[in-house]
Every structure is written in structure tokens, then in C-alpha cells.
Image (cartoon, rainbow, N blue to C red):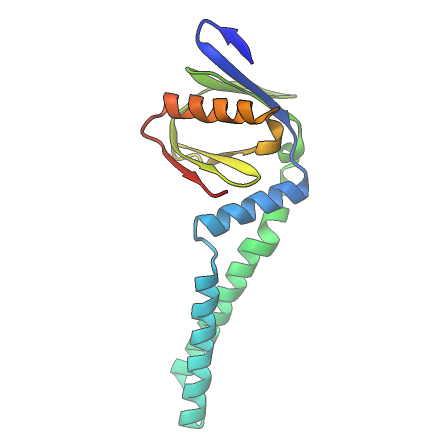
Length: 177
């Protein structure tokens, strides 16, 4: 912990491995309900309904075919989004694996990597705390991903959460532990 005129600060440094990044994105997809077991259940019900209609009609009607094709397309899209896309994003953007540092204080947060240093307003809409990661949703620009293991201690994690909630009291905080 460092003290300055603005109050407490929390400093973290980390780099994400491909495995960590993929795990974090998949967690986000599940918790934001972009991919869920309900979707898989609906696809199975639709395929079952198409099979039953096909058996009862003794042929595959246009409706049955359409139901099967749409179900398969949705299933493939979900599999692409959940299984393949996170790793491809990491591979296409090598900066995701580089070491990055964040400094959080009451007024703002700063981000620094080997090439850039940026001072950002808190501007949090939502803060999610998962078992392994923090997700900071800022405005319309997506989210910042912070591994909980990057914090030196539980005290630093709690101080970070306090700073975030103090800076953005209107932000919605969810704990998924």
C-alpha cells in the first residue's frame, strides 16, 4: 500500500497465459448468459420435437428440416463462441499475453504496459468478482480483466473493491464466488 494526497493506492502487475484468458472469457460468457445450459436444453428439445414430428408425419417436412437446420446452426455458433473463439482472439492479439500494470486510487486508475501508459477514469457500470478474476465493465468499451491472483494479499483485494465502490457508488457489484 502506498499513501499519497488522494488516499490509498493498490498496485498490481500480471500477464495472462492463453489458458487463463480462455478460462476468463468462458466464465464471462456463462455468467452473462451468452452461452448457457438453457440454450443447450432448448436445442435438444427442438431436435427432439423435429424427430417426433418426422416420425409422426412419416417424412421430414419443411418445418422439421428448418427446425433441425436452425438448431444445428445455433449449436455450432455457440460452440464456436465458447470453445474456439477465445483462443483465436488470444492468438491474434499478442498484447493480451504481455505484462501489464495497474495502479488504482480514489480518483482514477492507470494502466501501463511495455508500449503505452494510460490514465483512465473509473467510469464503472458493473464490477464482477469471480473465483479467479475481476471484470470491470467501463462504459461501452467492454471490460477490463484482472486476475485476483495479481493482488498481493486479500487486504489489497478488499482495498481495490473499496476504491472501486467509492469511486463509482452507482456501479452494480456482483460476487460469483
